[in-house]
Image (tube, rainbow, N blue to C red; front, top):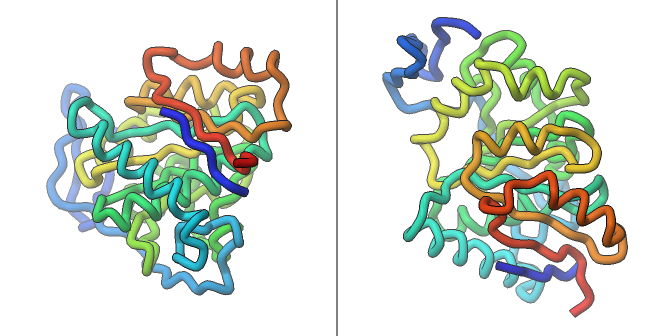
Amino acid sequence: MRYALSEPASEAVSGSGEMIRVDGGAVQLRQTIYPAREVDLKQGWLDPRLVAFHEFDLQAVAPYNRLAISLISAAASRKLKRVLIASAQHGDGRTSVTLNLAAALARARQSVLVVESDFLRPSALRLLGFDVETGLSEAIAKNLAPSRALVWLQPTGFNLLPTRAQAENSAELLASPIFEMMMRMLMPEFDFILFDSAPLLAAADASLLQSHTDATLLVIRPGRVSTSQMAKAVALLDEDMLLGAVLNRATV
C-alpha cells in the first residue's frame, strides 16, 4: 500500500464511574467509556494542513479518502484495528497525516481514536487549535481512567487522547502496565485506533508501541530523509507489520 499526498494498579475508575478490576491480568470492562470533554472545532483554529477536516480542496482530500477505504477493506479480511503511524524524523508530517486519516475514516462512518503517543514533540493540540487540562501522560502518571483524557472532536466525529507537553520518561510511560490497561479498555470501543508515534530515529517509542498495534504505516516526506536514514528507520520496524508507506507533500 503506497499513497502520495500533495502538500501498575489493581483497579481503576471507568468513564462511567464504575470500577474496572484486573484479575489475573484480565481487564473486566463494565460499561461503555465516555469522553470527558467535547470540543467543537472552528475552521479558524485548524492548521491549513488538516485538509480532510473540510472539503474546500477535494483534490487534497481524495488521497486520504482512498487510504481510509483501503484500511477499511483490509480490516475486513485481517486483524487491522490498531495502526501505528511512524516516520523517520520530525518534520515529515506524521501528525497531520494521522489527523487527516482519522477525519477521513470518521467520514466513512468508522469509530476512530487517535492516541498521541509522541511524548518528545506532541503537536496534535497545536494543529487543532485548543488545549486540555489532562492528557495521556497525566492520566498514566495519576492512574486515571482514559475517559478523563479523551476528547470528542466535532464536527469531524472522532476521539483524541492527546499529549499536552513533552515528557522525558516516554519509554517508562509506554511500558507502564497502566498504559497497557488503558489500551485494553479502549480497544473494544473503536473500529480503528491510530497511534501517532515519536520518530523512529529519535526514540525507541515506536518499537514499544508495536506490541500494541496490528500494522504500521510509514510516513515519508521526499527530500527530507536520506536513503541511509530511511534504511535505519525501516530496520527498527517489524517488516511483517509494515502495511505501506505514505508519501507526504510529494510532487505529483
